[in-house]
Image 1 (cartoon, rainbow, N blue to C red):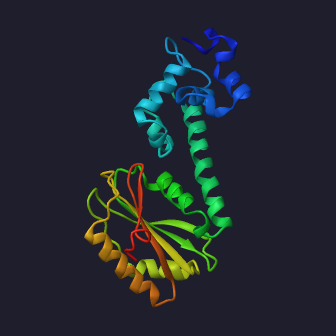
Image 2 (cartoon, rainbow, N blue to C red; image 1 turned 180 degrees about the vertical axis):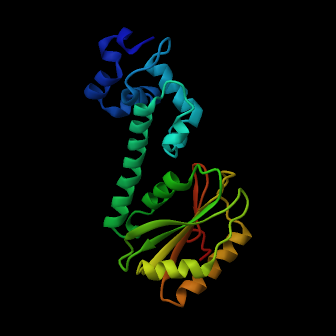
Image 3 (cartoon, rainbow, N blue to C red; image 1 turned 30 degrees about the horizontal axis):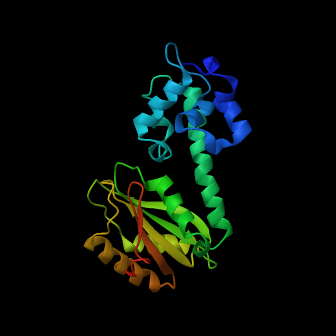
Length: 224
């Protein structure tokens, strides 16, 4: 059924304006952004196709514009709009972390890393460089590896920390398998980087392992 065929009170835009965005289903919310479907397939069906392709919003929010291209009905304009909304979410989280110490919003740090690393098909080691007040300076993807292994060079992390004039860092990497459980190799790497960065008075606050829908904190587990 097309949106026009629905009773006025059941249409997504009217529902949102009258009762708030939280009352909309996942397809209805995305349909508002997409606006139109394609011949023989209404916008609600198109929205369901998109969410099904990515496994819901958790997957969609990790997508890049190129990831949207294979979906029939998503032309350049729609892909650009969806990609823009995803980038807005990333920047909103970044602004919060830039404005307040990370200790005040640890969940925001996890959410931020989920958006950047959570659905990558390959392993990436990234570093959040923080100022002396523990506010975000930048998120740098330092090293990229295969599905199972990434080579991380402590000297490069130290050089980047000095270049950023960082006072502290949060280490992060993803597990493409989706399981966020730290390995022995992860623990060894953390201690190696902690020792190297201590030589230049840069503190390692945490190391976060990002899976699909889960982020594990070394600090919370007492592994730092």
